[in-house]
Length: 328
Ligand code: CP
Ligand code: NVA
Image (cartoon, rainbow, N blue to C red; front, side, top):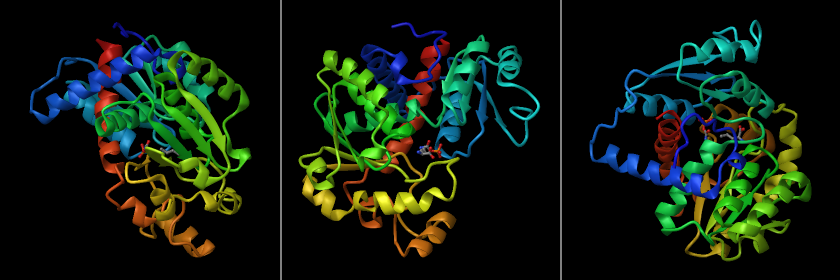
């Protein structure tokens, strides 16, 4: 498998075999890290990490992974660089390509990261856009594979706003690797029709199925994985909260839903999560709407079934695999 020089912008651009290769490589790199075996084979290289939105996991993963691979990394954000306000994406891409071996980009529209990749001479990795979050899916799938020993035929249910980066990317990932994907929310939060159609085409070859369900109890019956994400994403207006809480509260992941799915079911979340009042936003919104938690109850978040921190760790191992595969 040779992925050298490739961008990583959306899983749509990768074949099932290429995605599986990245997961295998991530597992191998994880084992090396745990065994204390150095793997700094990219010594002398450097990567630029552009963040136009905030991040804990993705930034840390790129920085630690780059360091483990022997590379230097430079963090650039919109407030402390020229990006966006004084310099176009196209010019930024051509400048950074002359200094760095790869560029990570987190921002708003997918067209921005596409533009960056078009003008850059080095691999560009999508660290989250409004539409897609492909590195997150690799971590999620590595976590599922570690837990169940397989991906194929896993019954995967996504609860909540399924038309944004997480819902879209998880649907694509499930279609590519043969999982049974269900999005559960009011119909207006289902992914875009054109993307559903594209995924249905992919699913024909992989044995995946895609379904869209408005009834949470029906959706989670026999589920292996229940996944959710925050209801109001980065960059969305504060006014969105009222409508989302109204629309998505029936889709909150709680004990009743997990029990209904059964003992086999694990809980997943890309994080960060509003599962209590221990964050500024969680507290402020919790008090405003009279709720202890939003997309998931604290009880489920903290339960045995929750694998959210394993999932967070796997961000680093999978991002390392993406950088290694596309740079070496
Ligand atoms: N899951 C995720 O992308 O987390 P960060 O926003 O902290 O990077
Ligand atoms: N949908 C969330 C994902 C965070 C990892 C957001 O875009 O804010």
